[in-house]
Amino acid sequence: MPVTWYFDFVSPFAYLQWPKVRALAAQQPVLLRPILFAGVLDRLGLRGPAEIPGKRAFVYRFVLWRARQTGLPLAFPPSHPFNPLAALRLCIAAGSTPEAVDAIFDWIWRQGRPADDARQLEPVATRLGIGDAAGAIADPAVKAQLKANFEAAMDEGVFGVPTLSLGEGRLFWGDDAHDFALACLRDPSVLDEPDMRRVAQLPIGARRTP
Image 1 (cartoon, rainbow, N blue to C red):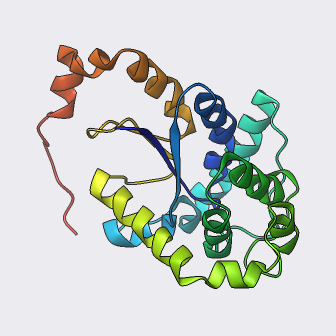
Image 2 (image 1 turned 180 degrees about the vertical axis):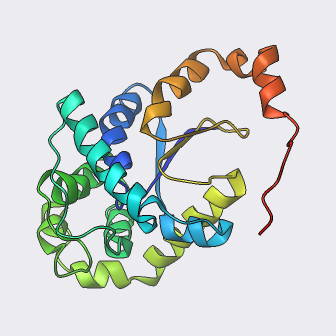
């Protein structure tokens, strides 16, 4: 099963992980699958970090700090969260290639530009050789592919973005899990160690009442 990266352009952590994923893709095939993070939250009945006021402020500051620590240029877009549908569809219309992913991340998170609709993304579309951004984003085939990406993520058990999937239920969520994913990619037996198996089946001692 190929390595798959599930991501949404709305996620700054996806932007932070992208250079590492691109480096991995230069060594072996990596399937790049843009998905709608809000859809994941809705399907699983979760709230996103930006929907919790105190967590929202912490996450934004943490993202800035991590970017500075790694030397990755980062400028937040004018508002966040924003509607990423247009960016996701543009990526698919451009073939979900590393060049497309890089161009869209560059626009949103390096240049800090808005990306809520086709008009705002026209410069990126032009850079990717797409003359009619609105038409590309509205293409039924593009919409269908985005939905198919989402269902593939749900079938794999994805619960957040970014997620690097090594197949067979081996999911690694978040930029900070990237090294863990690489270790398991090099040596799949890591997840078969006794302690790894034990914690994966650890009994639940208490449950919250809804």
